Image (cartoon, rainbow, N blue to C red; front, side):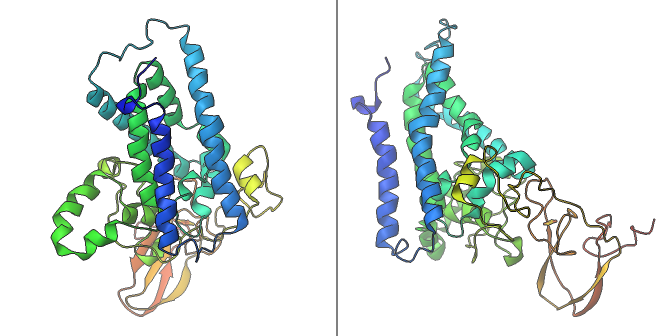
Length: 358
Ligand code: FES
């Protein structure tokens, strides 16, 4: 049996719950809960998902791995004699690397996107938002399996402390109490926050990922996929540091689903044929190959669709979610008419270069 942190039984569980409680109190004192526009459906989905994750999915997967592990007695506790801090760092880096790629894949592949999209339906940030995902999203999440494997190998104590540290970064980056604003405001702290944001996920970094549309020049749902460390985004070219916060959160053209559909998809599906969670829903490419003549205004920002799936061509309507495509944000250099590409073959995007004729 592994000893617990500081020799106090179950202290990790109390601390994980304590961190959640701490942010609930902060958001309450800050008046965010009082002014919340969250619907009943939002609360049910977030609190319900949190409870099921903590009480059923995580323990279920860990017990399953420990049970399977009986067939490999030589491996059990094989990490036990290694240095605790080394194990903690190793556990966290592997964990976060797995989560970066799982999260990124959930934005780039249609089936995983449908399990993750409810996370992005939240129209305001908050301590509970990180727990909005379909149940199957969690069952397939490699990190939860990693918890079980590392525990089996004898790293339970590192897992316990790792989960506490991770909880601190993840809840703070989703919360509406954004601690990093203080550091941006005061020049003195700029060197500190410049180093911090290059290592850890900050609220500004993650809020930008939840912004509704890239057209505000701050949001970028197709960037900032990291959970605890920002190093993966920097390494794999998906980091956007703006130090600003989006004005609007959520999804463009969101067909609101019942919480049960969002949580239990694909067991339950939507009745609305326009919803991505409808069984027969299909994203179809634009049939208009001819460019559209658009009147552009100097210095105004426009978001041009590059995937060809938008129903609002030539502009992006968010249909690219669940694909590897993303829209192109451009600022008009002058006022006047311009032909914007609809065939998406242009090499001069967003402008038509007559590729549709060839
Ligand atoms: Fe956004 Fe096509 S709908 S890039």
